[in-house]
Length: 325
Image (cartoon, rainbow, N blue to C red; front, side, top):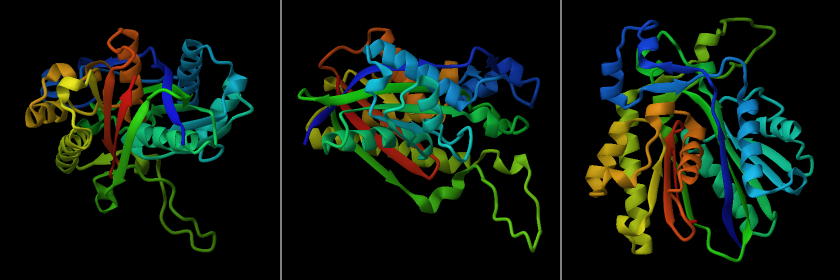
């Protein structure tokens, strides 16, 4: 068995910013309504770039920060619910765009927990000796499946991508990854794909609106708060640590009230939670790696620091990770 550690990070977001006042032109809402319920003030929306474009930009920044040549990459995993195409995978498109033709490539879909799921796969592969390194990306263009007439969901989502490069190491790095799912609650957060098509019985139709995100906000809130509290507490209990031993907790950036609930329930100061959802909204698979990259760029994480990341989302899925930087 080998250890794996995160060597570098990178992120990419669209230039176009939609603030709350702009959304008020589309739906019956206001800056006050959105901020008090979500904490979100702005979100980035892609006008021209697809998911693979944002993923490739994040990947190239990450590789530059690591000083890694593309031909050295052995595996690319992209976590996304908004791929460019059903096939090829977004990871294969990223491979082409950055020129990493020696790498295996695949996508995974675990919604907002996707980045942690992808890290789990990469860490397991490296630990087993199958690969020496991996480029792990969370990337989304949620604007493609957002109903801009539904004020309960359109205020939440944004586009972006974040990436990490991990490699085999004799030093401590990724200490613990846990993932899970509650598929019986899958209907609480859903974006439909194409239905079956019988050429001999052409009944019904499918429109783009069928793929718009639909969400039971109350049930997702209950799930998210339970998972955040339980995941962090489980890590604390298993490793006999407390928030005093942790440098940062990086949660999925879905809703400020979810994070504040966990802070109060666990008696952890809000200062321990890295929050940037006010600037980007919920970017699903991309939210944790974007936040992680920001924290690194701000010099908030140093070698030896313990970091926790927690994700939760459609599926319903969840995941947590404990990292020594």
